[in-house]
Length: 216
Image (cartoon, rainbow, N blue to C red; front, side):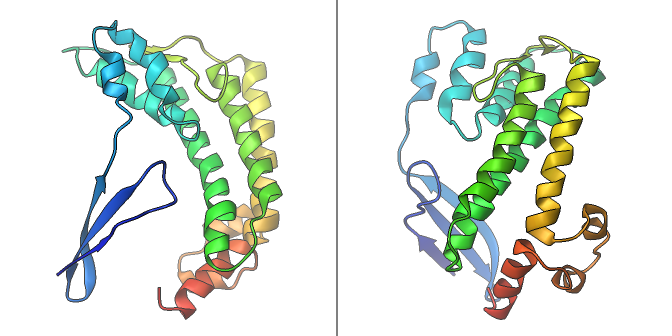
């Protein structure tokens, strides 16, 4: 049995989701995009390295993910290429920084309103802005940085850069603890079951309880 949702409003553009069910449970999902912005055509007949500048501008929300996908695609063109551990760590850190800042925006600007709660713009933007600063420290700027290149990154952070990012992360953790779970992050990470998460207060357990109560 297949069910389709024809319009998804929480993405850039439009799409269809095709759900395949097995025993009344979702077994597989296909996503079909209905339009294109022809970024591929912009890249035709250009130097391959131009993609490192063009592709991150596909999106102002997840541009860093597009940068790393592009540089990895270019690196796959070579039979042998070695990336230093330090460069791998920097890439992974900045990618996760972007994921964190997007999750704060997604949760407070999209998820809570779906449950009838107001948008908490300040909660979303404060943490998101801090994570953007952390990316900029390692990546030179954010959004649309181009610090990742074929073979690694253009520079390594100084000791002062690392301390600056640590300070930013500490502040974001405090925001998470104060609003999302109203508990120490260590206590949250020790939750080994959903019931233990439900024992916490904060916005995240509140939404998870509503999901369970509505059998979603």
